[in-house]
Amino acid sequence: MCGIVGYVGKQKAAPFILEGLRRLEYRGYDSTGVAILQHGAFRIVKKIGRVANLETEVAKSPLTGTHGIGHTRWATHGGVTDANAHPHLSSDGKIVLIHNGVIENYSAIKKFLLGRGYTFASETDTEVLCNLIAYHYAKQADDAGENRCLAAVRKALLHTQGTYGIVVMCADLPGEMVAARLGSPLILGVGDGENIVASDVSAIVTRTQSVVYLKDGEIVHLTPREFRITTADRATVSPLVDQVTWSVADAEMGTYAHFMEKEIFEQPLALENAMRGRFSADGSTANFGGLNLSASEFRGIERVQFCACGTALHACMVTEHMIERFARVPVECDYASEFRYRNSPLHRNTLFFVMSQSGETIDTLAALREAQRKGYKVLAVSNVVGSTIAREADGGIYQHVGPEVGVASTKAFTSQLLIGAMLALYLGRLRDLSFGDGVEFVRALKAAPDLVRQALAQAPQIKAIAQRYAHHTDMLFLGRLALFPIALEGALKLKEISYLHAEGYPAAEMKHGPIALISEACPSVFFAPQGEILNKIVSSMQEIKARKGPIIAIVTEGVELPAGLADEVIVIPDCHEAVLPIVASIPVQLLSYYIAVERGCDVDKPRNLAKSVTVE
Image 1 (cartoon, rainbow, N blue to C red):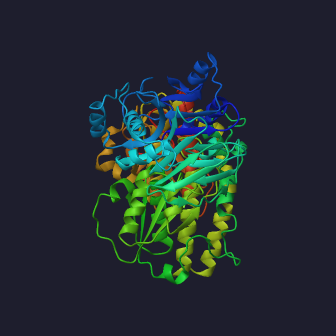
Image 2 (image 1 turned 45 degrees about the horizontal axis):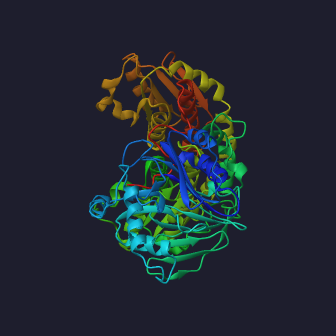
Image 3 (image 1 turned 60 degrees about the vertical axis):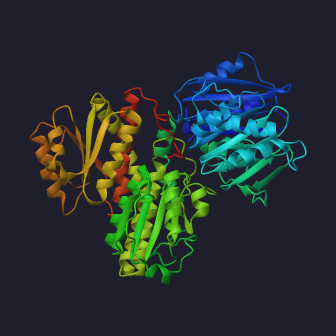
């Protein structure tokens, strides 16, 4: 979950590392630090808070070396202090290390090292690993058969349990660097007379579009002009160099106030990109090129299981509704973090899907591996080409929406909803969805970007509503059927970026307990679209109104609510039920965004959160 940048080359390392840390700050912003090798010793600067604090400190005494590492932290072990910030230096001054992940057996290792004279300045598991590498480095003979630092890292990792993405430098070996990964992403950027290692492509694209996605268990030794990848048992790996297909401009904020605002308004284009080239020539079904299963194999599927976390799980819940509605296939959604540890009975003809914007979510990756271990095919929906989940899945679908920097997912979420609807269409057409219904479905999906543009046009009205309700401390989001997960997502968005307490419920569940929360101080956001259960939703609204609860109603065109029932009404286009969850997401995204802005919150970097969760 932390941001990692390492540079070996011919130019000053610090400016590039600081720029990379700014681009990775969404991965962690409790503290930051940089270590540069100069004149045979490490100069380390660390500060709690944002990268700007680090830049101010570095400016007091510029760093001139061409070999360095930097880190932006999301705290796991140890509080947010300068001492706990990365990089960490071994007590003998020989080894410096940055780390993403958790070393689970750090306590036993620390006890071992204390008995051998190593000292510790922090509370972190990372410093323990750093000293363990120093211990093996000190024991390593100069003629060990490979680079001494590489050999020390390899031996140290044999004794660790947990997850890691690490970058290591040794004071005795200028111009060299060692990196390794297990369960935490690392990417190698291949440049001209320089090589870079980072936890995310966004830190690399300013210097090179050529990248190597390291796999679990791989260790890479870098110099400015070459790199060599090996496994734990020293086997050499032939690298596959990929080309990044987006530019640095895609990850810039532009004229928007926040990345989240930019990404909300990018959604029409993101949806167009997600569906481009994915419909059949006759316009009656969806096509996916990377599923690696034949139509007959799909017809043999009797159940579908989705595993995901957070926002992605809400997208899966909508997809569950769509597949059961249009393809008549039973679907189950599970928290990825729970699936791994449960022993639930699974139908033998079950197809698994995992969904993760980053493709690195550790719980979702663990669920994928557990399903495969049990002999099931697992397909993935992900936005990041080359991510671990994308590589390990048996097939999958890329979202193609470009980088999403805001911690609170918006365009990735609606593209997941779109892909879920397309999956429902594809499976439905393999079964009993008629040609005509398929054509209507495709037309509806193709109309989604323009419908979202219409919903975005309500932004000024929604901003005004947000300003009126920003002082509240509790809010409920209520929907039914496919809009219940959108209620969950709306509540999550508000919690994430404004720190208000919010909950999502099926509207009919209010009378089974949550209605006790209703008062003038607790507004409710209702989804009230045109349809057969509109009257039921209106009845739930009246129960709230009878108890003086303020109501914000999100209705589709043509819905007429009883006079005075809703305090605020937001109108979105009436549309096909497969597209409705996408369009209905827009008002709650905007409402959450504008409430957070009104409350003075840091929208793109909410407290205690980071974009990609790569630790359990």
